[in-house]
Amino acid sequence: GFNILSIDNSDFVKKLDLELQKQNLSPNEKMFCNFEFNEKIKEIIRYYLENNFKENLEELKNYYNSEIFVSNVRLKRNYFSEKAKDIELYNNFYHNDAYIFTHFKLFVNLMDMTEDMGPTHVFSINDTKKIVKMSKSFVRNDNIENLDLKIKPYKHTGPKGKSFLCLTSKCLHKAGVP
Image (cartoon, rainbow, N blue to C red):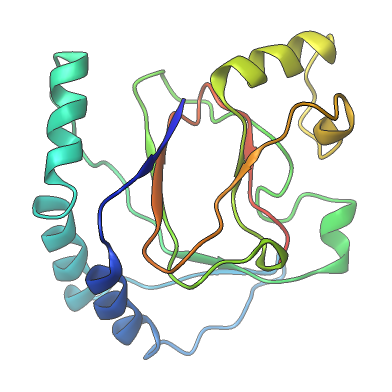
């Protein structure tokens, strides 16, 4: 369902960060902002995908015996909000994505990430199945971690550049609240 990648993304993140710092964005009413894409940012991402991430794409291509395409790139930052405890602002409740089962998402830390900074949370496919079975009928919410104390999500903490690949249509996941 998800795999922590062992590639060194530090140079990619450093270059990307230099460009993102030029954008003076503020959070919207839902307490997140999407960074804008300029030609330099597109060039940095394209280079990363064609070089640093190329081997991983080839592995997926071989495993699935199918072409693999990058269809969407999003650069987003979430901000703290008291409201995030009660309402969903920025995918901060557990959910599955409504994509076909060949849709993967790549998550890359753009800053050093600690647990109190709101890292992405994800459950394995097996744990997702257990959770759905325990809850009888799954409702998009934030109460999943209270179902069984033995089942814990992976929280994507670590240095900037650390990344993981996730089959988000099969793994329950959420954005952590900073």
